[in-house]
Length: 113
Length: 114
Image: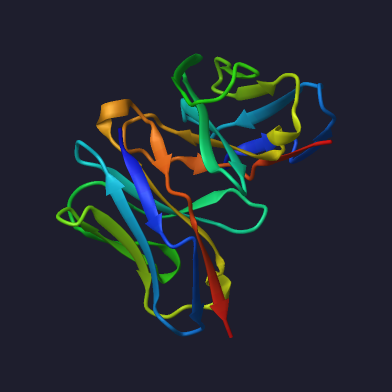
């Protein structure tokens, strides 16, 4: 089975711009979670989608949003980028049952200048 | 809500020495516990996971972890460190009280000295 894929792998943007990141889960996985990883804050949960609905949400401002399509692929969007949004954004997919392993993609490295 | 504490943000061991990375969890219901490893500029890779049953869990690359309910701990060990074990390690917990929400510890960076 192919693993979780994320595109693009690297992205450079300037302050004020917006960005869209994409995640394709493992085939058959219906849950997709997004995380932001920075040296200072570590791994922080952004949100989780299941069956095209946001089921869980972390403590991030409304500039961070996401969606999930009927094929379980997911996108996250960050509007009005700030310098502090520079981070590794990780996507993880799982079957959904509680306790299921989350399988991570390689991440998208976003740099905001 | 569940939470995880990893004791020690940095651990340094010599090659061939025992690796011990500490993790304590908090959960109001029986937890599911995970250890992940992250190499530079990569995503997280599952090392092992505890659901129910045997409390000693064996994972990949010679790692194992023991679930101790009385101590609310899930420490990760490896008898003999290898240079390739140098990476960041994350402990995580999820439970049935909050759907599939998984909480990660702050991570422990393992350095292996030759």
